[in-house]
Image (tube, rainbow, N blue to C red):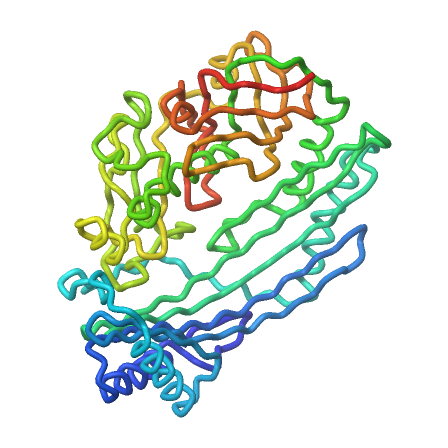
Length: 450
């Protein structure tokens, strides 16, 4: 039985497995050639404070079941939040009814039976936080107070937010596979402001972990958000130019994320990717590598199996700059005439190997004279054409030293050339998300300013 907020969940893993068995049994009885079902239950507590006052306090308890049935190559899906046996059977009946009206799809169906995971590893993903609402409020208030008290120039706040969530998901299909595992996630963030009028600036910081004991102390999160805000005071405008650009580690994972979007199977078979048919070709510089590591203990994107029950495994996605393959589910793999890579539901812990040591200081030295970007704005990214244009905030660097903050600029380029133009990957790796990467230095981008 899973534990959340110090109390037992009303439904445990065995209960969820029983619900799936009812759904699959009903699907078989109605003549489905294949079927799959996923059941999940999530609980959480979220607290938001601003200027020492509680603004939000939310308790969550969500649950859902989704079922998909196949009649040969006809597919139907339905979902419900009612876990009673009658509701489950009615949901399966709806899915079966839908399937009879859909067109045949030669690629539809479950993942191959021999790809199902047999002995899923325990990845240490569940660490429930026995946290009361009162204690959560206290932590958030202390975090914000540390930021507000850091310097007299910190004069306002957008608040501090604490969230703790626990989930339990179980998946099963008519291959005989049924499996599930609990997860937790905890986060604490703070956003503060400094200055006044046109010189008002804001910035933030946060901590996030599977295990609440691995979170950065709240007062340090607050102080870091204050430090970052103060560093942005008095920004200057710069003239339009072309120059090297260094992406801070927390932004670099977004750049890798655009690459990931382009190599997903759906983007490939729909021919909507700037890296169309790029497998086997060089898309990053020589010496650059990205590995997928789905079994990292406590990893934010770790998973013993994917959304179809397929076993996950380590792979080298980029080897010496060359793309070794795509991220595929069983459906997208069939569309491309390939084999699933165990990525139904997404990538699992991408790790970008650093190409240099010495942290951010070393990366600034490698940058020399150029732009260090610490915040990006807007959605000007087209993963079909690779066109990239986003508003940016950061610092102008000269001879490896930060000179002054800059704002009201736009950085632009094309993702294909941007990825190939990566000069260095730092070892200042941000481990708070599913892409683990340090700061990334790009050879040159267009910087639009005055």
